[in-house]
Amino acid sequence: MSTRREFIKNAVAVAGFSFCGCPLIDAARAQQPGQRGLPVSVNGKRVMTIDVHAHCQFHETVALMNGVTAFGANIKGAQQTFISVGERLQAMDAMAVDMEVLSINPFWYGADRDLAAQIVKIQNEKLAELCASRPRRFAAFASLALQSPDLAVQQLEFAVKKLGLRGAAIGGSAAGAEFSEAKFNPVWAKVEELGVALFLHPQGTPELAKRFTGNGWLANTIGNPPETTIALQHLIFEGTLERFPGLKIIAAHGGGYLPSYAARSDHACFVSPLDCNPTIKLKKKPSEYLNQLYFDALVFTPEALRHLVAQVGASQVMLGSDHPYPWEDRPVDAILATDSLSDDQKIAILGGNAAALLGIKA
Image 1 (cartoon, helix red, strand yellow):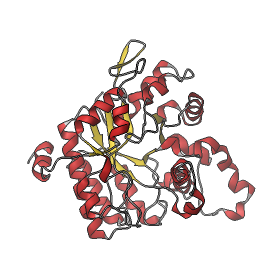
Image 2 (cartoon, helix red, strand yellow):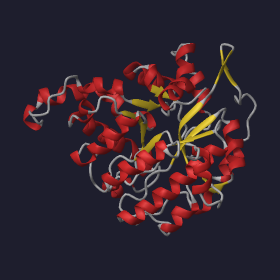
Image 3 (cartoon, helix red, strand yellow):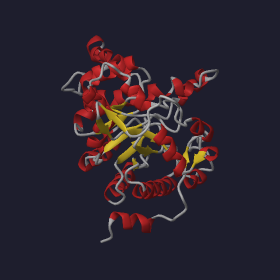
Image 4 (cartoon, one colour):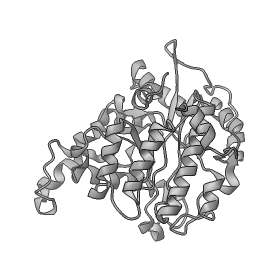
């Protein structure tokens, strides 16, 4: 039987791989005086930094969609913002990031089954080829055609067992369906069986598009966090996390707004039991389910990170940058600047937690 590396080499056409990024922004990322670069040490101990929230795109799959999503919107930051692997590595060095765990934001959930299958196949094979070529710098989350759960189960197993990907990236919902719906249970069961992780990244809330017009990029600034919050709340209140206690989910952007106001969830069904389903019996308070989820540390300030850690525990938080989008150009510095964290907690968040969860040898 061929080794995984041989399989990948034979399965992938050598067409090169490119990343979504902004050349002007990445050029500006040249390390500034006082900015930390590689290697990173905490109290004299070398730390492998692992960024679980980093994005990419491939020309081939964008072309299959003619540059637009299945919903008619532009695939933001695709054609005009590809960069080379060398440029990506240079940017990572300047950001003090040893490894990026790459993911592709789902733009194919509204595509038909055959097209979605084609997109996922290309993306997963190209991700695997890249990771095999730079195993100390890149890992990746697989793409899944979640609008067809039976197909997604097959794609996940193949991506993990044959391609060596570390789990899968998912949106906040799929083709209008919440992930707490029963039709997705076979996918979550397969995730549990394989022992891998899901990276949940929002796709925005198009229902509010009219109210997001105007200055401030509101569709992203305040539009993305609610989708993550809604997705997680459905998984909690509909009992999905109860049925699949081994489900490992990493929530982007610090979990949206949920960790900031988690205690409110504990009161909902007590205040208004008529608005809750009496047949769903949760064994824990809704806020306690946050302790079995994982979150990136992309919350921007030491106080916000302190609160997130206080809510969910340092063991559940991981380095995240949203690279190549310029939300956080110095993610490592942001964690090291959080004085409320102990050295051990900083080491865990910078890379230890991700290494343990994703099976990465530090």
